[in-house]
Amino acid sequence: MTTTSAPDERPSVSMTDEAYGTLRASAALWAGTSVLITNRRGQVLLQRVSYRPTRLLPGGGVDRDESPAQGAARELGEELGVTETVTRGLAVDWVSPTGRTTPPAMKFPGELLHVFDGGVWDDDQIAAIRPAPGEIDDIEFVEPADLPALMAHDDARRALSALRARINGAGPVFLEDGFPIAPAVLDRVGVLRTARVRHHFPFHSIPVPVGLTVRQSWVWAFAPDGRVLVLLEPDTGAACLPGGTPEPQDGGDPAATVVRKAREEAAAELAVARYLGYLSAPDEPSRAPAPLLDPVRPSGGAGAQRLQCTVASHHRPAAGRSPRTVLSTRGRPTA
Image (tube, rainbow, N blue to C red; front, side, top):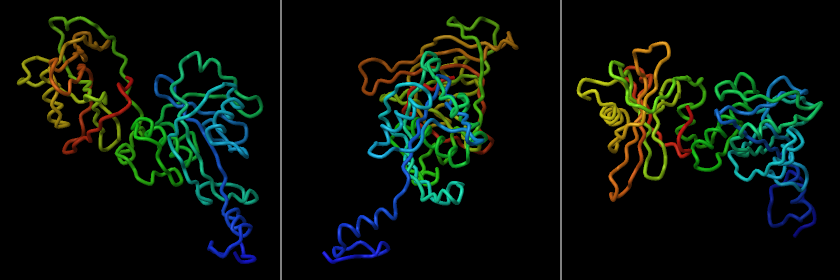
């Protein structure tokens, strides 16, 4: 090797070890880590901190000789007072020097930020949280659609991308300033960017009483590998189950309705359904928005799959627009 090389010199076989090390150090980035935690309703844990007006996921900078996963676990202990091990990565984001607003004196060189899956926490885990005094003012669980209003733009994009990666179940995503390098269908449609419509209908595990009108029929359809069939509204990214309004050709059979609608909306062929129950609308006692059915492909056949059908309120796609079909890998979505 030769004697010396300038720090801005391109690497070559003629560079000394010292010069090559100096060159690489001159291009060093910060390393950061954060943890995505949700409750059982799918809401995301955010921290209100004392040093900035926007909310943050738990996390921080990675210390010297510390892996990003170790840093994530350490930050959970320091900020929330909990002991957790994080092993599943959801996203790696290259935050460019211009992708984040920082004081000039900070000389922000860019950052590689790792987002880990902290899992779905139950009430006991949430009750055990002890926010760090003087740093964490409070924590709250918020709807995914509210993240852009509460977080910095790049932080919100990163959190939503990580949450979509968790739902997709295909491994970590690689981001640049919060934008996926290779957007998946959930990213392209913008799943989670609109508020979820919540229905709080009582469930009845009995046949629909005579005289009640069935307004809608929805189906939980499971592929042989356990994935769930959902449809995505092309204008809003909202997810819904296959199904719709009963038609005369269905003969008053909710199972026939969902079989027909799954075929029309998703080109999916469903197995025979078995009835489970229905949901009723409290403000309309004479109407039954939701019977449940549980279809099972006849035993002995290849590719046996389990199916659940529900009758409930359903928002149809806009006229002339076809919904996207997605098989979610996360199991049954929560209502």
